[in-house]
Image (tube, rainbow, N blue to C red; front, side, top):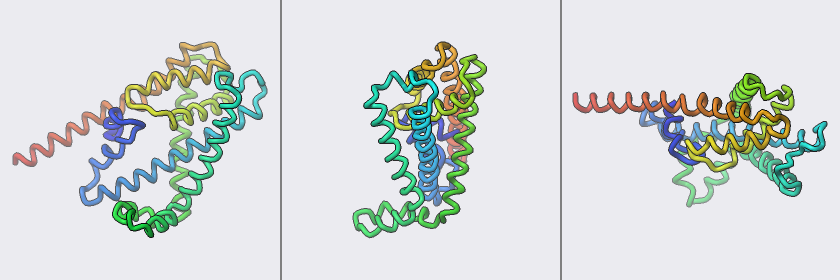
Length: 242
């Protein structure tokens, strides 16, 4: 929650790491950053792979030939799919071979100093990396099901399976699009409408669902996180005064 608070002021939520380490002992904070990066990489990998799969399914296996993302020119749509496939492949290789990559980069003297802070990642086995990936998938599915529930409550009227694949593409767009905290809402609303309006005319319901997800998953945790950070600051000041 502290991470959510700080991330509201930084591009693409990179400030989340700073908030997370506030609750880690000072001597372990650099290690904690490297572990947070690994967790974020795992989450990004799941998002990219699922989004790419969604693009592939709806491009080649959609029953309705008129809904192949008409808001995207065909050439751009194919380019997006190809780029996503290539990115998925390299992310999988990078993630599963992260220890080997660190070892390889360690041979370059110029990288020797910064790499000492991520050496910890070299200790993860393939089984542990897959376990982290599975947990990221569970978290991803929680967000997907949450969004599907809100869309259902707003009576958007899209089938379960179709809604699932559309949401994988939505989260793919959000993963690669540049955003900063509060400016994320307009992009969320626009992306959701552009994707879902091909299958539903309930634009207001689509926008309301986007707003609800933003408030529940970002704004509310950020408010609570701000209170927690304020509590840490007050505690430290009292300790210094005493």
